[in-house]
Length: 494
Image (cartoon, rainbow, N blue to C red; front, side, top):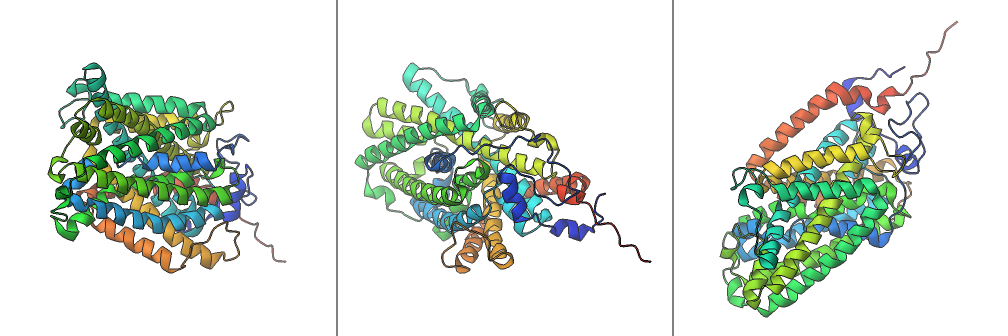
């Protein structure tokens, strides 16, 4: 018998932390009367990811998302002061990373901030966060796939003197009809993901090693062409330019959230999750700032606007030879592949968690008996991401991703405060230092960057949330597993 609850009670009902932890261990811990977990048939995600592989997921989902192509859109907003924009974004991400580390160590489950919100702020907020995450991951993967074609064309041009025709390499409105390279990239990623998470994590770890090497190579060569005069007019658009650029590049820190989506597939999660989050943040921040300083010192900021495969072009200009740029373009191809791999992986795990909870059809929580991966779920995600990458311009995609990332980060920070108050005795492998100031600062910094986004982004986000509300009230509120818990029989009198 389904429970009879009011709308307000449904929106505020929370999923017990004990249930989330039990599910992460392959057990079902909802109260008697709840239906069996939809689509799982006794199969659960396998714990096969170690510290280096998990750190590589965080680095892989972050480095490449921004630094390989975002300078062409962020530098025109802030000038050389985009270096400060990266610092501002890194500080915001750092405050949030500490909050993620605590939540991940306390609730080592798939679903990331969706699962954390479900345990702390209630089903209504959790569903909204889930939609923001799906938007964030789907749009981010599409944006990354779009940029992959730029470096692929650069490599083909330098190595073989050929290019993919513009009408097959750009979205409508940007000189093309269909972005074929982006679709091919998404197809290859989905093929790898359905084979198994262990194989995907090993491939990603190798690619991350190549990525770090190629960016360090850029910094070393870039600094040989450093000219202090390029940084002379350091802040041409003032503090507002720094804020605008920081807001638009914040999506490049999505990897911190991606680490926590792997909560159910990590060995020793209470220790591994927080360590991987912090390692990822440190490595990413150092690489971002190093590359930005080298690039802006080697090339005047006015030349970044709309520059295709800009970092490879800078190397070519500095050396006067094609081989460094060709090597860098090849490294970028590998690097951006790894980012797309991890971001699509994260989205499938969020959909998996929402399907398991009844927020979406249980088909999303079905796992392959052979590989233990959500095959149908992955194919749906791949189709949607490929469609966005093929037909939607890059600038719209990046700002939408930043908004989703900032909302998710804010919710996690608030969740830390709520969980400390509601379950102070919960086992935590890591605790946020400077509590409660740190999570409050995290929320404040996120709000500041949200305020700096292009107002048009709010219209797109509002439309997405309107669709989400229709789905929640039309389907999810009734099919939620928490809505199916049997009520106790009424006590008979007399």
